[in-house]
Length: 473
Image 1 (cartoon, rainbow, N blue to C red):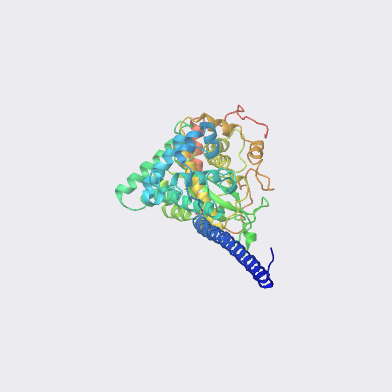
Image 2: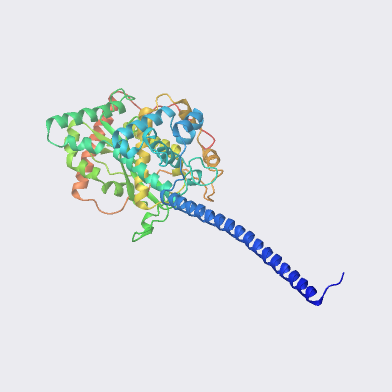
């Protein structure tokens, strides 16, 4: 078969056109596939951006409120905790915790307290806030509640200290130290209020006089001072005024207790370098005692303290240089028998609240509020403890080893030390005023009368040694 030149030329052109069409179709298919891939990537990108935006909003919500989305149930946490562990962690039994919750709820109201039964899941209920504060008071760290391995789902350290301040305010509004109100009623001039105050003060006196069979009668409280360690204070003219003779920065805490070791008055805001008598002179209580001293003497009421305080009709202190076996020594023994309760009160308070085993790393104002809160919780526990064998054993076996064990996992390099009662410091020098000398004279007369009463009933210092020693002395 023969082909002409024109036929061959037409066939060649036709082949070229087919190749171009195939190439174009291939390009279109590749472009379509690329567009499909690009569309898929675009959708994935938009979904990722949307997810990131939602996560970012959640992050800022967490940052703002200090929470995640849901807090654990306090009732479940308490139920799952053994009684002994609960008492050790929070320094009170489950029954006492529930009673404390009830009193706070009654005092501040459901709206402020936010009990778990009515609290939104994204908020911290009142029971959990109270438990966090008690754990901090007991010596726990904020690290127990923030971040990994914490069961509270709290994201911010600041939230912990906001909770602390809130609960301290609750305690301040729910409990009070009654001595000041008693004395104000006593001197109010209103017969019903005075009679009520005399009855209350008489109850305090009768409790102290039990050991002497009513002979050493009239004591309505024991006073002493305690040095609470703090950090070097900021925002004061001279921080050195807070450096005490025990070689640390401190607040001088003045307090009075009854025979059951309840604190009925406290003043925790004095400089660590201040002598106990100087700190006492600065208080509202001292002004009230000066004002109502004669009226208190008529009813036979007085306080007892050590020789750091000035002698007066309203505040009796021991004889100096009393001879063993004499009437002065007998008086000193029975006065000490009343006064020792404030020493025991300080001991229980310090042993119970581990936050006092190291310096308070707070501002002066917060430290004062914290000490007040600890004292009010101490009173609550004294009133509600009953026969708590575990607490009694804890106090009887407490020593330096106990503190070291409880702080074994603490990230601080500071060594826990027991606090000391800041007495025995030399009195401030200077000439006493005529009024001060007259008050001392009246105090001496009352002290001599009580010493003679003790002598007439043959109440002397016991000769047998009943002291008990532990490994610390």
